[in-house]
Amino acid sequence: MTPSGTAILVQREDPWSKDAQALLDELSAMLAVYSGDSGQSRFCLQDVCSARGAFLVARNEQGFSLGCGAFRRFDYGVAEVKRLYSRPNTCGVGSALLAQLEAEAAAVGYHKLLLETRAFNRRAIAFYQRNGFRATTPYGIYVHQPDARCFEKVISPRAKQRRTDEC
Image 1: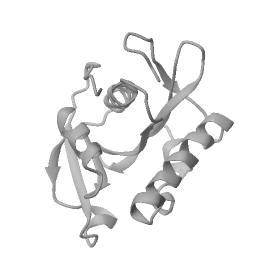
Image 2 (image 1 turned 90 degrees about the vertical axis):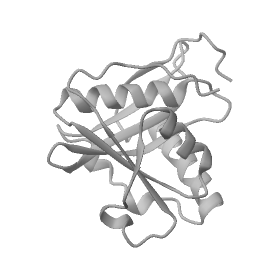
Image 3 (image 1 turned 120 degrees about the horizontal axis):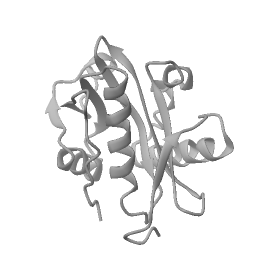
């Protein structure tokens, strides 16, 4: 568990690292259990390794990996948030990751973020709504998926890192 007040360091990391792969595997396994689909077919590590993408890992003060998240180019000025995950029983990790993803996306020129989650994932939906995302019509490959729930958020080039307690 990440106690309240514990520092969370979020930074770009190699998505092929041992820690990153462990986090991505945990997320995929969890999604497969709940939805029957790991989501791996809709995520390509190369997409987040470009100058217009990022892969981030959150760590505690001891260097233990707590979560990850990424964004990739979707369209001109629009990035898609992918694979946002925090390990169970951690507090503030999702918010810290999302804030850093927003800041990094704004820094490379994006003005809007998109993301998709599934209807069953009520916790994620509530989390994104608390963090300023608004429901939008399905986009891209999600247009024909009835259980897809898509969200968007307008960000500014000077996006501030806002803390939202998720516990």
